[in-house]
Length: 421
Image (cartoon, rainbow, N blue to C red; front, side, top):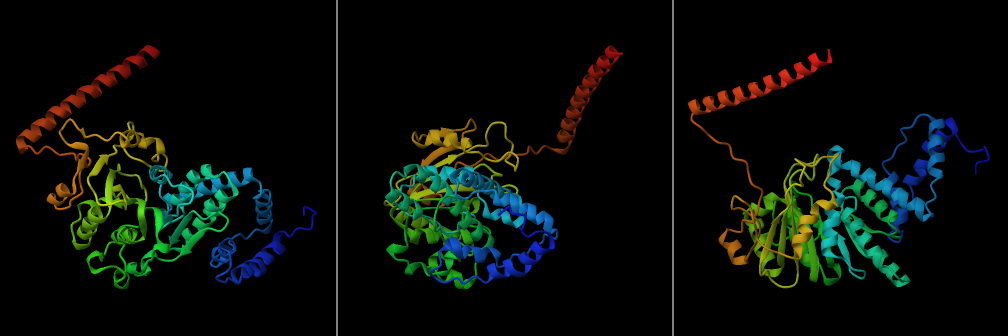
């Protein structure tokens, strides 16, 4: 109230530690409690106050109190700040797995073109990046009160881990979703054959966790031919059971899926080509997920509109001037311009060395290749192997050339110094 009676110092610390936090941790939550309220308990259940200076804590409270969350301007600004905090998680050790670069989520959402009235899902949603990218497209379609309700009900997410679940709910609240439909749980814990039409979605976009493994009991939720020890494979199988007829999918998968030919991967690929339209695979440049992982990744676009007639592969090369992406030089949406230009004018592209940068393959051709989808990949550097005497002679000549260049540079520097004298 700014009347000079506000708690501060030790009194404020005592209130926060002994009354506020214990009360928030013990909030009663029922199945009918809106998630916007239930999330408070989730957020504070494992929280402790590590601030020992009550005067500084008072100053922090005063600054936060100046934010007016009912003001659209303040709310939008806070949303931007929150998003930058999530971005910082990308380099925060194990937390990096929760964040997919915004350029990737925006590109996939733009490509799938979600519409108001459709149900959009991410079955391992992390901090909600794909859902927010979808909402940013949908908000431009809101014209009426009815549209506003459709916007509020548009997205659905499931997240297994507690921290990103809380971050995802908060992220959606900050993007004007009144009661986010986010579940704290594991998407793989239910038998896929039990899903009904009400459990299916018009659009699924996701970056499933890869490199992990699930317990044998989880694998039993899938038909025998689709049971895999790789988490990403199970999520891809799950998508097949949770996408509606005519539904659209964009999913990020590691290179291991493309060239893998173990039982489950092989069966998933066969089913994708037979029961779905796997129309496009984008080979992504490396280091997109640095520093969390250096695994090479791809985007698979498919829909449930009949079987595959042909699958286009397109290699997105590293942008000019980039050797790799990093925290200070991340991938940007503009780097997808070559894909966008090619998307509506698909044609074969061949490198100077004869390798393909873009090419379409029929299911029969993919089958003849033993379902190895590692096509239109990045050129690998090959090292020239010479006989020992030739190798020594080559190094001697290279060293002589380098020494000559160094001598020339030193002479130029010396001349400049003499001129200054």
